[in-house]
Image (cartoon, rainbow, N blue to C red; front, side, top):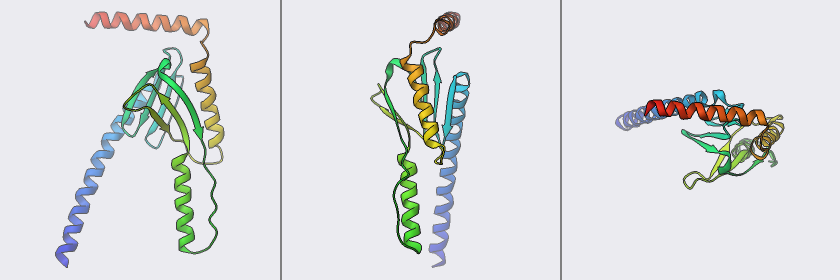
Amino acid sequence: MELLGFLVAVILIFWLMGKKKESDANDVKLQAFLDAVKTSKYSHHFKHTGIGVCPILRQLHLYDEGVSKVYDFADVREWSYNFSNGGVVVGTGVAAAAALAANNRQNVNDSGLFIKVRDVEHPKWQIRFQHNKHTEKELSKWMEILNQSINDDGDAQDKKTRAMLEESYRRMEERTN
């Protein structure tokens, strides 16, 4: 019996060490994403998901659980949000508390900003937000950010700045080649 307990402890330790390495790798990827969106006009990250919007370059940066991609606005098909906070559990005791906790967890998992893009490998992204009384307002704000950034053509200054940035990037690429 002691041997079984020892084996379980050893397995648990190795499993936790593997989780720590996985977590460290995701933290490095998240930091790389955060560094990339520093120049974005709008950005948000929460629980290993994130979004950055750069209207000048007309790019959308997305991050989810260690996967980070950049899309041109032309590749964004649609966006929506869902805010789930419903469900009632009637009763008392441990079973009711467990049912309420499961219901709340499901509400959090179902909520967020959802973005569909032209990408076979990752066609739908979910960006999570803190689940509280301000969440729906924050999600509405992000809907408007995406509407203005992607649907609106942008003013002349943005176009001029974008052209200058693209020219600068082109020159840098020529120097490195």
